[in-house]
Length: 364
Image (cartoon, rainbow, N blue to C red; front, side):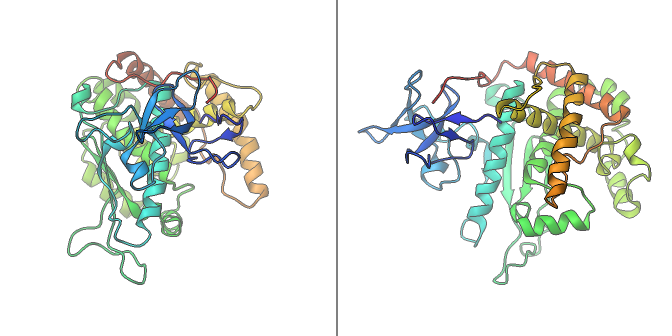
């Protein structure tokens, strides 16, 4: 994840909406792909504070109305076109009449923006049918009802909202944005990590199976991950009845990967994005031994990640915290990552529907 620079030379981070040094209001400019100071204009709009850009901007609707976003867009007079390049994919937002849901939405949007940063960094195709992408990508942020005592329960007689993916629609139960409830689930399910960004990275893996594999590369994907034609429902029931394979660490990135080849693909995809995010961040914050997270050879990327794993995990252990990078990259896992790496390269080459942000380096 990149850092940015305010006009006052203060360092800015991706979630900032206010510069604490000079008090400037901030917004992400889609024209120069920078987090910039917003210069108010007499007509109620803004000018990009990057002197190399100076584009006219308006705040995303979810920025000025709900303050859950910090992105801008080029001013538009068309109806329904006042959402930024991240918020336009929202199909359902949390019920803001319920206590705590605004903060949960803030956290969900922050994780989603990081996901989109990674997808643009990699140059992957995503969008709607109007953009030439099928299936259309969309997000449902739904929650079970929360009574007065703040205990989660299903809405009415309906089933509990399940985090998952179906034909481009990614549903996240907003309970996952409740840090206490998410930690309870992590412990109960014996997971090393359970995070919002992890859910987004996993579910987008299912989306890219549909975009890049389904009906196109299923045989070669099956050769790497196994027969995805076997019953998913039966595999799911067996997993929760019997648990993962006893020796899963020898061939899989996580215990859940053993459930079904689709989940192995999605978990490996998520681990790949974890690696990309880590390598990109350390490169942008000035660690030594930088490795290009987009164009480097996979083996070089894995070696660099393993070096960082030792250092970062020991730092966290010294503080009594969970490991930053809990995964173990054994040979079969690296082979699966290699397939994902090659698939990402194919996706980048095929992507003509959306223009990814360039690697902007000019100061805001």
